[in-house]
Length: 306
Image (tube, rainbow, N blue to C red; front, side):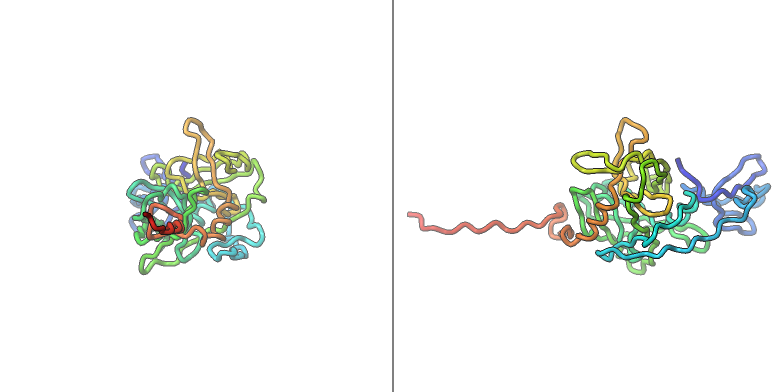
């Protein structure tokens, strides 16, 4: 399902309604973010505007101060020193939406998320496998509106085929600081806990799906995965799985083709291990189709042949 970022509602004169987050109010029009797209509604068509505070009979929640963070051993990610408070999904989506990106290659697309403000991001290896021409699509807030930006100077930093993880870096000239996510801890995540994913299933960017953690120890192909009821579809690959504290607890990876509510994510501990040992998985630009460097075989000793 696709969730709006907030519960503001525009009641229209034709007895229909538009629900979403109001990004801007102008003299002749109102700009509303529906979660999957942004629409402009003429003022003359609006009968009444019901804001979230009006519906709930309370003032809008105040911003929660950012948690104290600790930088990981690799310097490429950060985690909260103490667990942040839980917040409603719609608030977290509004806060974290800019951190989630769409990763495009000539062969297809997937999702990813920024782990540093300098443009380092995580995605799945299979999203970029065999590709060197990669672009990243980002939605950023500007003047109260969402602006789609496409970055085409994307470098492959490291890839781990066996863990299905990759580190990319946006290197476009003039690129701004990016909104980053915090990496959480599956040890503090309980089975049955609510989780949600943000990604681009089937190319539908900024789609939010919600579910629960079904198990933390689902073994598949010799590896352990998080199993979740949050819908995971092609295009979600490489995107983040969040807890209600806004921390990434997994990287969405795959689903059971002929089943519903059977999504699987790579545990965040594997992501941290990959980031901490990224030098061992550095991408070899001399051989783009192979992530590993092999030593030259020893030369054969020459012998006199009579």
